[in-house]
Amino acid sequence: PDFSSFCGPNEMRYLALVSHNGMKETMMKFVIANKNVLKKFCLTGTDSTMRMLRRVFAGDDTVMFGPSCASGPLGGDAQLV
Image (tube, rainbow, N blue to C red):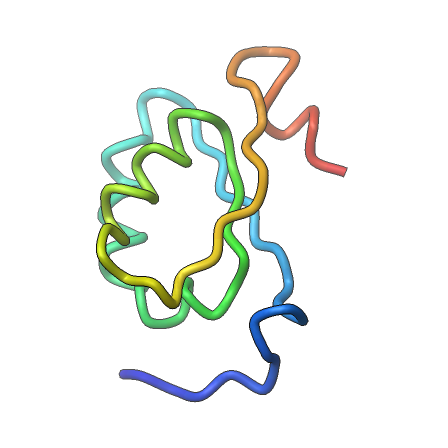
């Protein structure tokens, strides 16, 4: 279901999505199933996750993306602060 956000585009909270390689397909299914909620956040994640997010939300100008993090042991959740 769709809902209205209390925040304007410049006040959005960031939501970082990070998964191990074996879980990328599961994450994509999660994103597709929850698109209406996720697009209420400024989305960020690793380079590979950001590519997936841009594919899933292609053509939706209401989605905001933040910076991406590097992949690997020194990226991902290690870079998210």
